[in-house]
Image 1 (tube, one colour):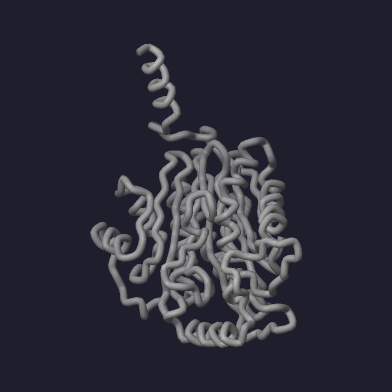
Image 2 (image 1 turned 135 degrees about the vertical axis):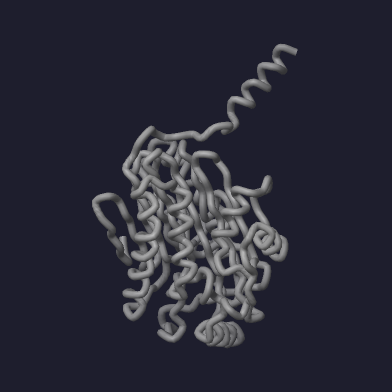
Length: 354
């Protein structure tokens, strides 16, 4: 009996009954990404402006002593409302012409998370994810159940048509024409053989086409995310997406899955990923990267190693932002570009390449 009691005490001591802080005070830091893909020069300004707007909204919260969780939610909300990005209004369409959205929010101090997937009637899925995190004993809701949960907790439901843009209808028609012509990749999970085909459009295999077939009219956009460290030493992460162009309805990618496209733990790091979701899911890449930081690897190196692992193991393409509990950070991508930004008390910086 004594041995059983001892094991129960040990198990209880491993639970996060209280907030776990990395330090008592730290310099607030916010990193944001707006997707990793072949961003054309004509879209560069819109991507950097969108990322800057998200940084300003999130860092305003951190600068007045607000929480990392509130900061990443505010940043991602701005990006969801900006049709430049594949999140919220203006996202890619499913094969049947609708928008389906996924999002995840994670608090690294309390080890709480909230996620939603395949929602069609919520303007800001990251806000629904926050409700799941705070108001539900569960971690993840999908489809109509997620929408009804959000409605019951004060969010308004909208018509899916309010999220759909004519630009995306045209993209869908062109993607389906390419697929009918045999130009799209047939493996939804990526090329796992030694001779990996390299694609110009790295969002996903449905929209893949070689450099020789590039058409500027097909330029796309990508997932958004944010990670933050607040003045109390708490980490948080958020990722939101409209998924891949011409996806089968009901498909869920890495963005809203814990440890895949998003993760936060005060004892390791906070991470958000973007890119081709299926390989990222198989590798549980977000957790892989944060574990490297927990083991002592600098986030800058861990970020590069994660993207190298993604490509070398499964031929995947994408980008990552990674933030440690001491404020050190890393960014990396193996796509032609990634929209990114960082905010600290010393200023805001944005870019399209690392």
